[in-house]
Image 1 (tube, helix red, strand yellow):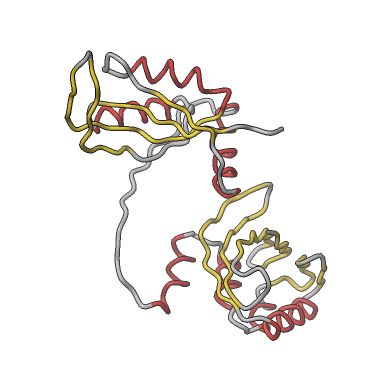
Image 2 (cartoon, rainbow, N blue to C red):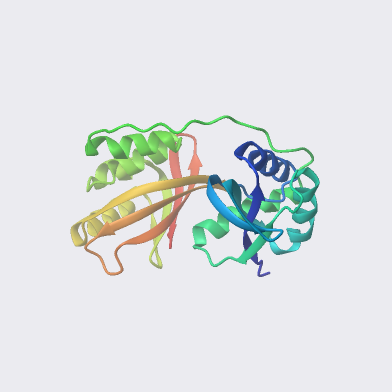
Length: 243
């Protein structure tokens, strides 16, 4: 089923009001969430030019939730006219997957989402540390973290991340057992040189799905790939790599 999404802009007089509206919509699972922007603004209001700081919530919603979102936003807004606009969304596959998963939960959820405080922290580190820091921040399971750490041409180390009878599927081919997996990795490393930057890790249908951006000397570079890992204890039992 094709689902249509919209980017939503909701007005608020000050940042605190915008955050309150957004929190209310999230508690109802009517929006995905997003930033609250504020800054200088001008409006024609009852025949006069009005200038003052103003605020907008920027978020996303599903087409069938638009009317309910309007009603709930207006319910908690303090403005005479809460300005709400919808823009049809053309988005990357990664964003669409996020929206699918986030808003699908409203059909089965029995309580509001749990609130977790988070703080963005900026630091400058050596480029050699990036792979380790990224893997750690994604909270990768140990066998998967070991796989990506070893993925620098060390086919023997990579094969040891897998169970004895593990299966790998990549580019239409299937490789069974550690020996075949080692040969697959040796061939790929000899043929192409690449780097990978991981940026997402999620659980889906019993698999751990890791998404990364590959850049190298292969056709179609750069490209994003998804790695579907099946685990057995501390080893990888299966891996399927898809765009």
